Length: 439
Image 1 (cartoon, rainbow, N blue to C red):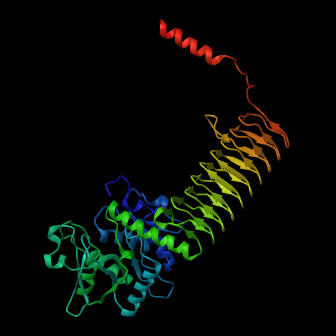
Image 2: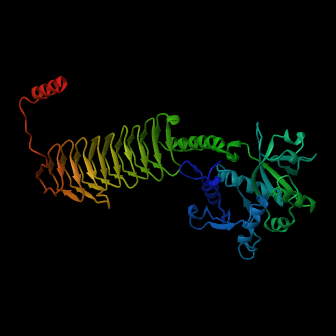
Image 3: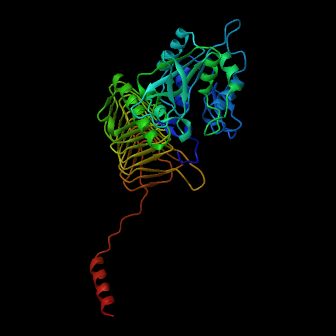
């Protein structure tokens, strides 16, 4: 990835890449989920509650990683009196694997009575993937790595069936095989697919389960493949919302993160980006806007060119118009902020209309302060509300006012210098300029 950041922490549609397979495993019914990390424990802060962390003491390959994970699982991973549950191995850089694909792999593993079952797929361009070598009967013989020139023969490199990095093992068979792995390869690493060689040598059955949709098992090796995977993930997110009754006018010009929730009959117009854990209700319209970690109730309209920042709540029927930014504010039902305004750290009452270029001055250089605007308020154009300040219900402000004191309910707050007209000013300026040019 050519990055200071670990590969699996790169974002994929709003969450770190590693959380995609974690979520898929949980959805498929995993009893325990263990994530293997380096000694720096860079993944610890992003893992959800209940996910366990194992540390791989040194970077000795995928076999070493699984050994670290098995040490955390321990010997008793089945219910009392039951056989140990099978061990599913997923790769943090194969993010699009679905719960359905995992269940299909587990079902095939049980049906085959195998000690190990690997998920494979057929790629037109298998460069960079380990090739699956089968014997004359079609059974898996071995997996050949292709990272270095000495890893595989030319004939093996021409094989299009590849190892996806996804396996299911009988727990005890895996436990017995891991200590017998060898570093006798071009990279001097413990390759997990060597477990298959060990199991076959012991006479155990090794099976393969071909996943037809290669998109589900695409690995991320660099930023270019991450972009390819992101496009596939984004398409799936769009299709999920559209099938649930959301209108997305131009999916190719729309970005929606995986955790976004959108209600029926809401319309998302082109060039809109919706990030984080944003929740949008029914019958809303979002035009050419950017939304991050905010909540929109039913019947809300935003944009074009609206920017809703974290902590924003737009209550039912609220309207936020052109070039309006709202941050950490609660905008009441039916309230309107039509255009060219910044509303930060504010509570705005129901039915209020904030005139063009209304600004809350919420920061004094040391701390943020809140502004409270009541219900049915009408602010004049170019009003600045200097927090902490409140404007009572049904109050007004005069255009161009800088409001530093509370405005009582029903009052008109005006805070601006009285106008003075200087007659003949233009003529004097012209004369001064002429005199200056003649000297």
